[in-house]
Length: 321
Image (cartoon, rainbow, N blue to C red; front, side):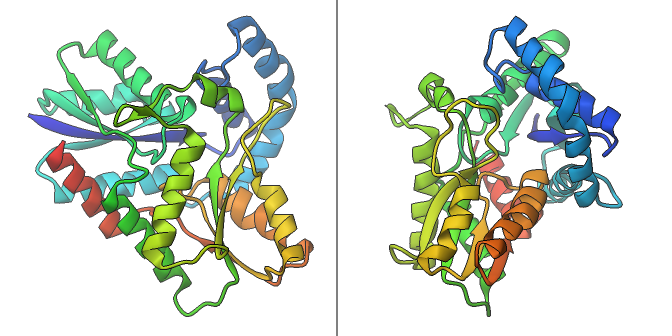
């Protein structure tokens, strides 16, 4: 018997400083998220970052918090519930950091006599700090607690036709009846050294995270009928002083008005569910940056969230896996 486990990055349990501190500690101490030697990682995270960052992050979470909880968790649960209703397979939800945990997700499926788990890391593109850490954590928990469970992993889907179809449709619908000069595809950024360490391959060829993102952008723009110059790609959420992949979203947002872009639409295709990086960083901070730089209108395109066509897409992948 097969079951589906959908997983995403995770979220703090509440917007309190205490819970945010615990969440950031788990997240940043992951060797795949911050790939420094343990002693140095511990020093940077626990003696520097966690001494100053939690209050600001907690304030950001408070701004986006829904009555039902963290948007990412709420939306992931909605997707899980819809997929469970649509599929003959049992469905559970797990987060790489925070709750529900991989143990809870795998146990929920094991308790339903599932023998093979279809693991769906909901990251379109592959990075060690998203896709790889989720798969490795799932294997670790499986080996420790559920050794008889088999795992089968959905590969990154950054160029899958069904995903591109749903993404382009969601953007087109969000922009229907609206005018804009330019569409910016803003992806989560990673340090350049993560790209050097990544050995993700598609059809025998190594493909960098940046190239995966550019492929998603190009295929989506083509599907939407956009022409060269009507869209571009950037990368957000950099942290620390290490070199990160460019161009940066914040710098792009302040530069576009000077290039004649007054009405901007922004989509964040590295995320399938709206979260702090999209709601607060893009739709609040990014909007402010663009308007202060001379922009006149800023349109944020929501993530796929719990769209029915997205759930249908996941169901089809599960049937084929």
